[in-house]
Amino acid sequence: MKYSFIIIVICFIGLTTCSNKSEDRYSKTDKTMAEDNPKYKTDAEKLAKQLELKGISDTLVLKAIASVPRHKFVDEELREYAYLDRPLPIDRNQTISQPYTVAYQSELLKLKPGEKVLEVGTGSGYQAAVLCEMGATVFSIERYEELHKTSKAILNSLGYYPNLFYGDGYEGLPEHAPFDKILITAAPEHVPEKLLQQLKIGGWMVVPVGGRRGQKMTIILRTGKDSYDESEHGDFIFVPMQKGTEK
Ligand code: SAH
Image 1 (cartoon, rainbow, N blue to C red):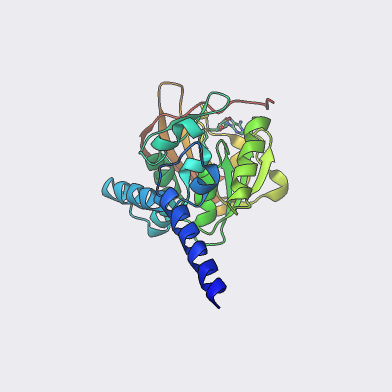
Image 2 (tube, helix red, strand yellow; image 1 turned 60 degrees about the vertical axis):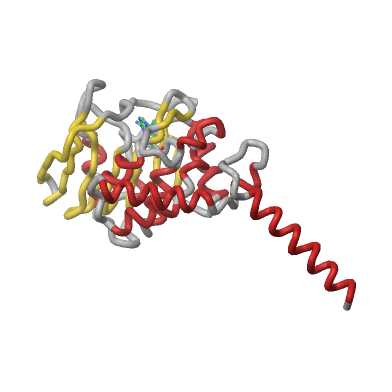
């Protein structure tokens, strides 16, 4: 009896030490602690509040931003910036979009749970995680094999299992079409024709269209077999959507 009391006390001390440690910022030295770090939750919730003040109103989007651990999708050196509303560099000279942009594009999708979404440009995997949190059935393509592999590992380690593909997003995924929505997270100079064909009638694509100096966020609604409606929703800057694949 006495021994079990001592054991309980020792366990309790052990637990409090752990939770104190886990109060630290996303520390480099204690990776496993950072993984279960409840601090990120508070930071992610603050980020969602900030985006709400900037005009994002879809509660499904705000809840997803408040839940996804964005620090897991960037290099350890950048983790302290992960909950600022900023784009950050990822490997292969690409970027994880600014949280506002992720939220804005996600809001334009007006997702209903279970809808089938094709994302072009998996990149870090963060946007795919947000879409998973929103209850979508997610398909995502990335043209860099390296990014495809790392994003897959991170997403799966966090319990997200979108359907991830290494390939050229200009081709889409005809074998999985049609999609309710298509989200493009890199900028094509012109709307990719083949992707329009992979939309359901009544579905739409959210795509930043334009050259390197800036793009117009565009929604293209498929109104019939060969008819589309287009509308513009502000100016943004994305990395270019490039043809083909690379290692
Ligand atoms: N959604 C990403 C944003 C990454 S930036 C995130 O949440 O992190 C855009 C990504 O689009 C880059 O990773 C880039 O390699 C990818 N990309 C560019 N052109 C592409 C194409 N044709 N097919 C697939 N991915 C492409």
